[in-house]
Length: 377
Ligand code: NAI
Image 1 (cartoon, protein in one colour):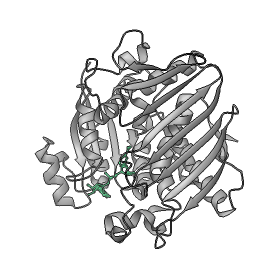
Image 2 (cartoon, helix red, strand yellow; image 1 turned 180 degrees about the vertical axis):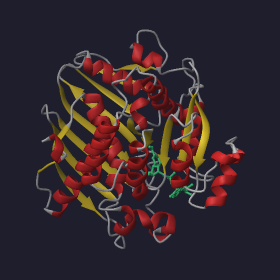
Image 3 (tube, rainbow, N blue to C red; image 1 turned 135 degrees about the vertical axis):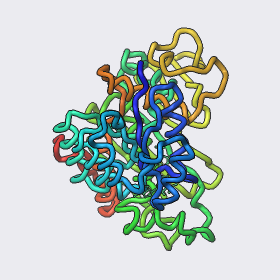
Image 4 (cartoon, rainbow, N blue to C red; image 1 turned 180 degrees about the horizontal axis):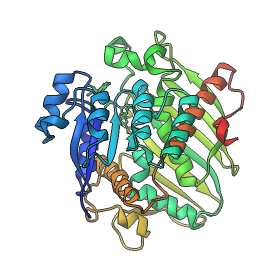
């Protein structure tokens, strides 16, 4: 397979998610970084892109120049990754889709449900792929859990319990640090803080593994550090279309929890447990039986888990290679072999609808509300 040309917006030097995209996109030789507008500071971005091997004429000062510069090139980029701050995702993603580029957008895909619906419509009209980086769904053992549910090994899923709770914003003396403060300021972060930042990963994964979409929810939001306008802790109860019960806790003040993303899936005939800090193992308990530890790379796992694992058994295969799995599926889809597990704009839209539903519910003392995007009701 020939390498696809790849362009990146955001993810400049020192950014949090930029390195994971560069490692991920280039891990399997599917993509080569051919163009970029990597930084809000034009000169820094151009210099950094060139230091990564991008030709000077494709190291752009900003995303608008990149759109103009790439649009008519015969070797234009096959995929654009949008890894800028949240409030810019909609405008950039929409513009590149309309110009006929495939896009991988960071989460949250948009700031509002209306924008999310527009991206879904624009992607459909363009015939291009619009993926959203729910990268945790691409860990091999998460795919294994999904396959187990799909093939009936747990029976009907009764209950999903998900947590994405860390303690890195738990120090009240650091609450005014500008890198922390914006996340709880509606002018910068939108309607939700922690739920929109981390909770939506957990909610996406619950739907992804259960093979079912969220229908309704009830939320309790708290700002445990009083100067914060938006929530730094949330408990969200939900129900899926198929009646599965969902419980989700997300927090940024859970001091002592580091990454803190774990999920348990309880079906009629068994239960599963996975944690992102030990991503190579799934704990599986068949009803009435002993708990077994399933290990990435061992015999007997699904083809899907095998396909996305490239390091032999017992060696850590971590976050950048989960991101790489998103790029593996994207490369296949761009080459005409769609992958049903690739998170798409519809998933980004469902997350945004859940965020707005949770905000509504929390303001109404936890009343149950419809969490579906209007276009899917
Ligand atoms: P960051 O603040 O560390 O880096 C942002 C980068 O984008 C910087 O290099 C900045 O110069 C650049 N930038 C800002 N505005 C730009 C513009 N208009 N044009 C070009 N470049 C621009 O932010 P971080 O933490 O890397 O987050 C970026 C996005 O990735 C966010 O939407 C965040 O929610 C998402 N994210 C996703 C994760 C995941 O697990 N999928 C994990 C961490 C972040």
